[in-house]
Image 1 (tube, each protein chain N blue to C red):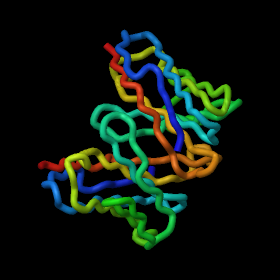
Image 2: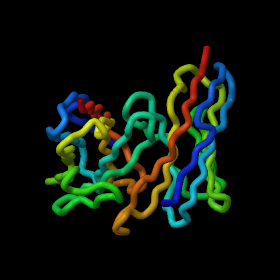
Image 3: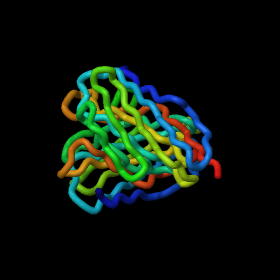
Image 4: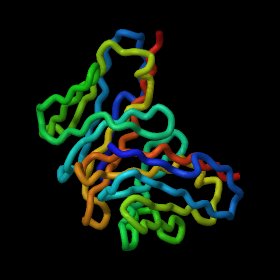
Length: 115
Length: 115
């Protein structure tokens, strides 16, 4: 099955640092690329990207998609301890039956922000 | 977004028994999904819960082990049958809203431990 690969797997930074998280995917017939933040159990939605080169921004977080090179990045500026979490990306592709779409997740990046 | 609840939030079960997890959403949604997250792993889609028809299972998951019901547009159940310690995971339901097919929002999850 086409993979979703995230890097780095883990990252430790200090408050105020800027981080860039990477996500590459293989499937070409996808609808979108999504980013989630997972702190305890439930992933919380961050961004959905469908078009190349258009940056999505929410506060200190931003993300962009490159459909030609099949990757996306998530940037976090001026990191805070509350940003510590696992960040997941997923591609939205046809499911097994081909009748609907499903999310296929990468393994995630564990970000630790120290004071 | 939508408000999604899951019951139970956690459970400890004996080998060979079954557990049914409920997922309730506060608005009508197009799609409902069930995911598993094994310890230290990312999320894996088990199946898409279809309203009024059989669920669509992903490769490696079968109806006998994970029967799913979806009697209406706001409610679904996942049963983990004949459990073994390998079934110890977090089980999450997610929904895609009528207004935005691509975005999926996750419930709070059920942490299952099988002894």
